[in-house]
Image (cartoon, rainbow, N blue to C red; front, side, top):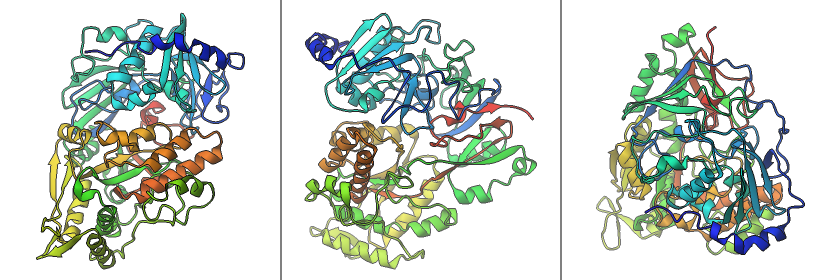
Length: 605
């Protein structure tokens, strides 16, 4: 059954007085909007500062992807989709500049208008905005997209829709959203939902995945060729409606973007060396230094580019599922973190060149201090001191090993923590008072040789604690299904966070994700303190309050001891054929979502 279309519209009349009461006198259409203050670019900006308006059109880029895919619909929870489709094929009412922490500029919408307290937002669609089949983008398409995504689409869209009290058409090209809660960020998030063509899905089940429904969308690229499990080829749309916008000038100039899929990262790397792939991101510093000296690099046909950035580390590592009894006790999780010999693993696999993630927002001004909480951060956390884990107020840092394989000090600490939690080594096996062994499953995605190597070393360390986990490797489809439904004990986990964290943090860390499938809360955390910190950051009216709330949230997450952190990627390493080029000005987000290929071009010397 489809969603109850336009159920929010029925409420619009009841809120007419509220809307009018909010007043329109102080509101005026704007070309852009920022979370705080004003957007940096003027209404008539010629191009984004990190785009080259003189970039030639033509050429292609071929990337090597690991795993598989079985769907072309990136807006539902079911199926595995090439991640690029969501950003290259579909557009939203507004688009982000990745040279600012959180500013949006009109894309499908030519302007945005907001209430005095951002309690409503009204968008005017751009005259001439079209889908790839040449049909115009209508208010009806926009309203259908929001209702559909917000009710039966991927869970990442539900949080925004749940805060929309009314949605109504206010003119031939105008649509207004009225909110049911105070949330300064929400009007920006509303501007970032993908817009779909309603007619494409008439008579179809929107929630069904598959490769038989080629997207009809508004983006600069269209899906051209697909071979199940092998490749997806996107073709630049020569009739793309927005090519002359300042927001798009100098972007999306490559004629073809092709994603080749391989069984594992080693095969993908060999394909790059053989010239089948033309651009390759490398995440292992040691491999970058020692294995990128093949003939094409020596001849200068392949270039090694290092791209800096200013964004937070996010969290990358191995998450523990607290829905399972064996991970509920924080002391057990702390013990497993102590047993993870990061310094030895880092030296073995990367030559010690990769710094470790120290908190969820490390490597940025948003990251926690590791000493005692002070000032506004402490004020925010104090009301929750009875639920906070040790270190949140007092100060916390990850354990550091001596670099040897034995890791004696931290293994001893792990033993003590297990004993405090009721587990002891009996006849060489870690058991509880009832004699039940401590065991769990580590779920891995097929194709990651590095994760396999990390877990091999970790399992060896766990044997010293009398623990023998089961390691299960599955293909991408199974991995996606099992992590979506939280069917694992421990698994690889990566969540990127930005310089403008906001409502997406609820999707990552709120209690809703304990039972609701498809969220990023893989650890199953239930922390009123974390949700209160998210409330504080999304409703901050000053930069100072925002920084304090984010640093306080970082403390709650890090001291929750849900994830065993690994490497921090504070730069990006991209090897590419010399014909692929990018502008000298690097955005503050660096190699972020679609910087490649958005502003790259192909040019022979």
